[in-house]
Length: 369
Image (cartoon, rainbow, N blue to C red; front, side):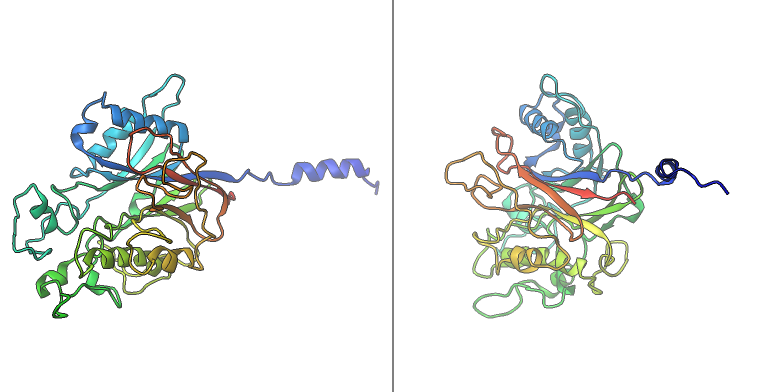
């Protein structure tokens, strides 16, 4: 038998060896757009939405959660119009459009409860106004105000059949829930009938699986907890904010008590990759949040990667380099799961008057299957 020359063996090995695909780099972003309403999106020349779209066309997220955009039944028309009219059209000379599919679902904001939830002695179920908003399941002067939407670029796919939402999950069903009490008497703040229906989520909590090229899936865990202020000594908003954030720790920990809006029970699968995104309305070092829920429940969780705190080298008076809003606190987050390679994190502060929050993002790499 004639031996093969070594050079020929080497060539044959190169030909036979499978090609290794480059890892996929993914930019996951979140931005609180500050109360975008249907009438804003209906104006194709709306200057603030044009500025927002121009910033996003420069950042070029692959996945984007937007907070504070109106939800219109049944499918989130305002968010879809923002994507189709503003993001898909170049906003500056030479800008590349962003073409993104939209997931939008109902929000608790502006949905009246039928109860005097704020105990101010006024039950206004007609609205609009603060008396109406204060008795809604989530604060809002009309149904769908301050809602959210997830946008995903072309080439990625939302697995709509596997989406889980938790808008109606009762707060009282959470083990050791911090349900508020009347300070002077200790009696429950909520009437028994109201407590049975009162949802944990002030907007909603979403688990949205996104399919990547090659078949991998990453779960976007989206929310916008209530601000921990605008209440009284009972701290009902601070307690709700704490438990809305704690929900994600329970969910990625496989909490058996959790039931989604379709009746499915349990938390996230142990091997699933994910990113927690949204305006969590809590700073791990400062502010009015109760018992540091971000630091306690998320930043120290073993299923999360080390904190990829976004920083900015753009100085703004009285705001340090990690504050994500003009009021000087870090409240907006994109927190990937352990096992995902974090290759960058950022924040854009040169946004003019587009919003009172800044867009933040994390860049991750995912190996091809």
